[in-house]
Image (tube, rainbow, N blue to C red; front, side, top):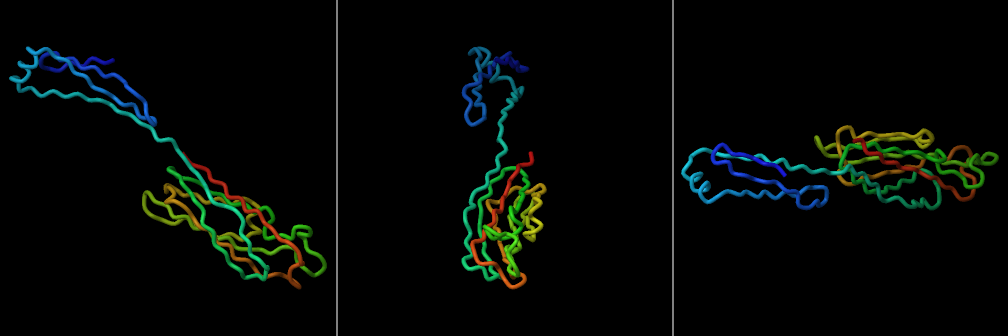
Length: 195
């Protein structure tokens, strides 16, 4: 409880905290004065003021959504797919990409067999619209074999506008072509807020 005195008649005001909702403290200002002092204050031309400090907080938040399976079907090379993902960050962020196999790898024989290759490389293109301080697009292009080591993009001072897009373009098979069988790859995307 605080006590504030004006320069005129010694009016008294109290500040009481009422309820906390979503991190913001609601304040109620109650003023009391006698009828005599209110009348004399009305005839006095002196101005009075009162400062009330109101505080709040927004917690830093970063969320990534989407993912799932992308099926190229029959791997012939030179195929392209695009996938959108959700990205909600209210602070600047870093986003990282890492390949488990460095390409689409044969499930049983990733090194291939004989003259047939067991891995098909690809190029990953990333585009993420950002805002603040000005609109921009965060982007990068990575060869799958370089993604074995995690690659990170930084938004600088920007925050996410709401999502992003990845594009995967498969390369051409090497040697006599790809070994028959199933191929897979796990591309990990990691989001980290910078507060």
